[in-house]
Image (tube, rainbow, N blue to C red):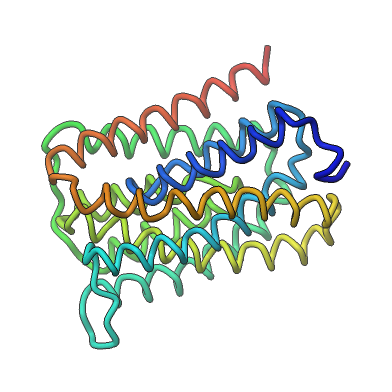
Amino acid sequence: MVIENLDISLLFLFIFLGFIGSFLDGSLGMGYGLLSPILIAIGIDPLIVVPTLLISQMTTGFTVSFFHYFYKNVNFGFNTNQDSKATLLFVVTGLIGMTMAFLLAINLTDEFVMLYISIIVISAGLLMLPKIQFTFSWKKMYLLSAIASFNKAISGGGYGPVMTIGQITSGRDAKESVAVTDLSEALLSAYGFILYSIFNSFSGNLILTLELGLVMILSGMFATPIGAFLTKKLKKKSAKKIIGCLSLIIGIITLIRVILAFL
């Protein structure tokens, strides 16, 4: 199965999903992980889906981070500002969390992983709806980063909701939270792709993975400036409601997938 042999409707579906995933992730800091259950549901091998999403999210994540910087949603300067420090912290702790997750995931069933992710993401969404605010501390950010990266490694999703919502409810600006999440997730996606290649020895089709990844990257590139621009226009109160609702939707969809697996 290669790109030229794909049904044209499937090809357009990948183009559409790549655009929508990048738009949601770029504007709200989450949503790309939703593509995983959709692609698996239409019959794409999970051993192809996960590395495809990792390599495409890595590339579009770097692109949208540039536009976040361009639109002044965030300041990724070389000085010791909070945005740069947060990104570095999330990446370093994320590398540890992802490595642990890959070692542990061997013994976890798909149903358990999806149930765990759905509970975490729904809980994060519920925190955004009432006026809940926590005091910011770097220790909390360490914990959030470890949990989010663990989620990313075992399922390909669940990073954005935890990191974006965790930062916002800890008092960080919504725009900065989205932008920092996007950049740190792009870097961790690159690491995740390498780990996945090592642990699975590309049991899936490497050529198909790269081809599908390229399709989703190209379509996603068109969405990144739009997503970053929408982030710039979001008001704090509106951002909290939208991000909270999207997190709930992601969590509920994941939970439904778990329930259907047992039917």
